[in-house]
Length: 228
Image (tube, rainbow, N blue to C red):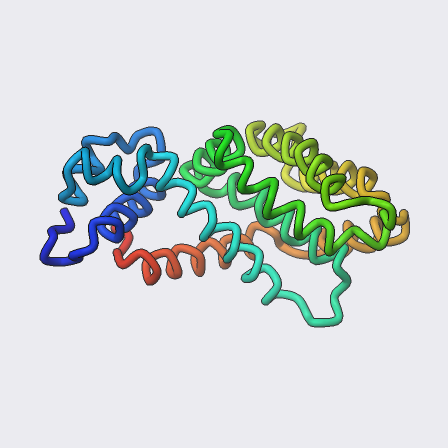
């Protein structure tokens, strides 16, 4: 348990406890009783700050989205095309949820809860406009937002379906990219270039490295240590 003497700010205590428990125990397995006990706060204090577990999850999702993609860019050179960058970021997200069951649950929850998916749609559509505007010169900001609603639905379906002997990780990644690239009118040459590029990467090894760094950053940001 984190006491008030360890961390005086109740919001920081709640975040520290919740992030650790969501990753280690699972979002759904973490009860409000667990949170209140381990963070040493009352139900009233929690509700005044976050209202529900979803409010805490939003903070975690904001952190994850901001950092998983920035870390993905560290694996690429400055001359790497934006199409390849998009392919790498997408492949890493699909791989991360295959590697860790609790991350899988967290991402599915984020793509399901209305307030959380709205955050994802808003943030992702802004990034997609930067990447794909050259292929869609007449599209407005609203167009990218509306299409992102559709592609995020596909992303959720692909994450929800765990890989098996037929729907392998490589097939899942390549199919999602093909669908997304077609939706955003990416040229055939650029599609082939991006998909061939990531086919040469050991995505599991790369994603494991990113997950390790991500967990380390979570420890530093939210002031806790994962159990060994």
